[in-house]
Amino acid sequence: MAFEVRLMSTNKFQPPSSSAIERALTEFQLSVDEQQVLQIQQYIELLLRWNEKVNLTAIRDPLEVLYRHFCESMYGAVVMPLEQCRLADVGSGGGFPGLPMKIIRPELELVLIESNIKKATFLTEVVRELGLASVRVLVRRFEELSEEVAPLDIVCSRAVGDFGPFLDWASSPMLGTERIALWIGGQDAELVRQMPLEGWEWEEPKPLPHSLRRFILSAKRTFE
Image 1 (cartoon, rainbow, N blue to C red):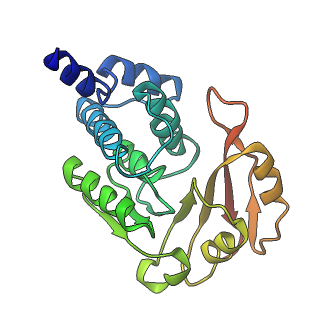
Image 2 (image 1 turned 90 degrees about the vertical axis):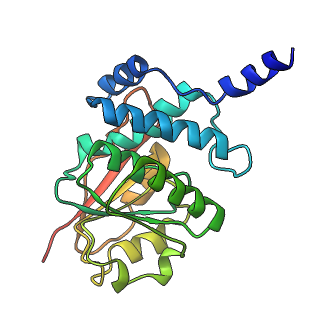
């Protein structure tokens, strides 16, 4: 009986199979190699184990974690140019969307900004366990940062709550940002697009596959 209990406890952290991961990513117009599949599996297991003690995600089903956190994050590589790119993920939390985009685009230079020290410790552990290069984890509030993270090509977030201060910071000339990207709900997308952002142009929101309510909303700088 004790063995059965231990087995059940272990299985709840079991990541999806290689075939399930490849199939899911195909639905998001993405393909991965064996190493990337292994990294996704390692990451999911770490996330679920750490989530027992640190509030990283409300989603606990491994397959739903794959679709909602990994596939939706990686879809950024479909709708944005990430080649030779330096990207900052603000309020990274469990690492989304930044770390999955790093997995799918290994050449990406990534800065993860997370003010919660426990979550930042988790991010550091993921980077170490997955052997990811060119990733910095900063335990800071984004408002406190300027030249030390510049220059940036893209500033993105999936967890920002107050859009005004975030947009002011992300669009500031000191960062040199070329694109701002938000993983966002439909109502918030319409609200954000009405916010004045001088020198920037909002693109049409890109719907995330399998969702009627979630989008990637991007703005591009329109002047040098």
